[in-house]
Image 1: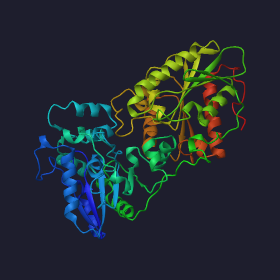
Image 2 (image 1 turned 45 degrees about the horizontal axis):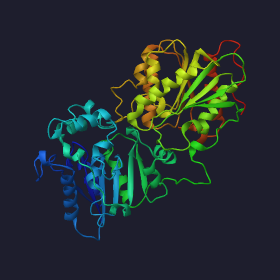
Image 3 (image 1 turned 180 degrees about the vertical axis):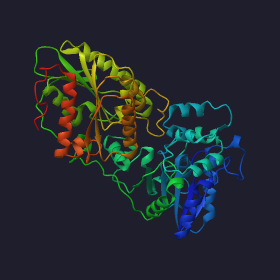
Image 4 (image 1 turned 90 degrees about the horizontal axis):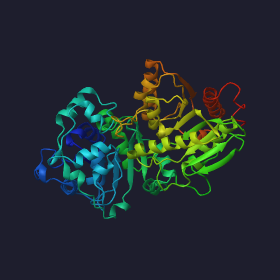
Length: 509
């Protein structure tokens, strides 16, 4: 028999696992939900004295109560619950399942895994012993996507929520390292912005923790739902937990020195090489022209680890687009901005603004004819220019972009929300390349943006790649993909150049 020990996340107790535990039992397994001290009505110290070690002790007590080393024991931690669950009783645990949670790190408190900086600051500045729980369904969305959770279940989650003892979030986690030998499974909820494809991409780009998992026995599953699958998809979650216990799941592909990772594969078009100049964090690609030419500044996505090499401006996709623009008669520029984490959008936007100033000041550039082109996670930066387009910005392009805050990113109340900013775009033309096989959470932001654009009458041209994936220029080398790049480039240059300025086809491949 397999025994599951289920650890709840923030503000919640054993009650969130009720239906999943019942389904596990019906499948022949045994399930025990941990009742965290100070949250559930269980014996233990008063809420003011509860810290991370108290919740670790709660988890250990349940593991010890199970007994019987002949039975497989799977420890499941949801959200914050992975922190007290990890690295304890390693000799007794056969597998750890991390359910839509961050990766615990030695010496780092659980609050560091909260992407929303304002929520982290609020936790650290809490005047009292506990953080008040979400009071409305909308409040829950600040902590994660509630996609798929039925209204009554969300109401019940709110009614039963309890204050989270601050000590559980601020006390640094101490790891002994013994858990490194325990197999791990990650369950990603796509409605909350995660996917296996995205994790693989981050590992390829050099994220040290994820790169260590690539090629390891660690497995992954996806659930097409929000952050609380035990409430929204209990049957599917039960199936995934049973499969995880058996060692099933997707494994990350390790970096192969003989094969470049997806983001470093060749660009899908053969493009004439343009003269390239490096100026600080900006590369210029110059067309063969004597008079000042319009310019396109390409803005990479992310977050990208600070120590990733090569840096984005040397990635084949960005270089390929820049060569295309230069072949079409524009000065192309690619900036390495500092979007290394979700807290970095302010400084990344400042980097882009500074790069724009430098590019427009170059005497080879027609400063009154400039375009911005955003990719992927760089999309939120576009909100600044959509909200107040300067007269010299003649076009804004976005390719498989994030066009609204993803759940839990912490940008909900910020200015980095293109879906909200497009209402002020006026006559600014927007060229949007949309891929048909996008991550659901990102696709939702694109549809929200398009709905808002339609409502306000914004000038948006959509270039569809029906069978394309995120980063299709290197992972989907098809005629459909090639045609999409050509159409998007022509659309931007048509809006950027005066009649007679365009030198011709920007692509030859």
